[in-house]
Image (cartoon, rainbow, N blue to C red; front, top):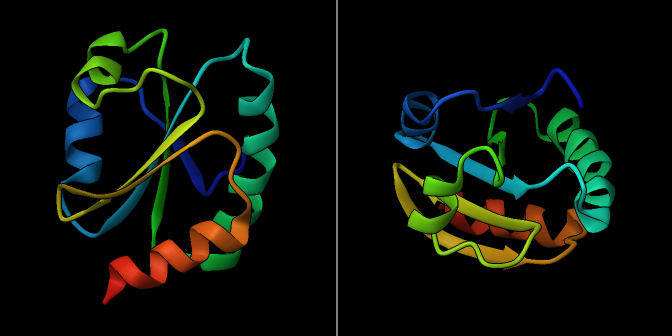
Length: 108
């Protein structure tokens, strides 16, 4: 995982992270093949976009309450927040171009 992608270690940390700005949350599991494929895409994207969008990872097995709260039934699920509100969601492996378009839309 890139130093530009934050791994969430508590629900408090999650709530703080999504509270302001544009944040992409990757709900994943360590045993999930598509999740392992999504990781390098997010790492490269995080380097490319810099500080304009925060990218965080949430282990859906470890934080089941967050997965339930955000209706994550398949992984990977990526949820885009803007100032604490869900503005978009993606289920399954996503390419960088798709996510970048979503970031641009959320930023406006």
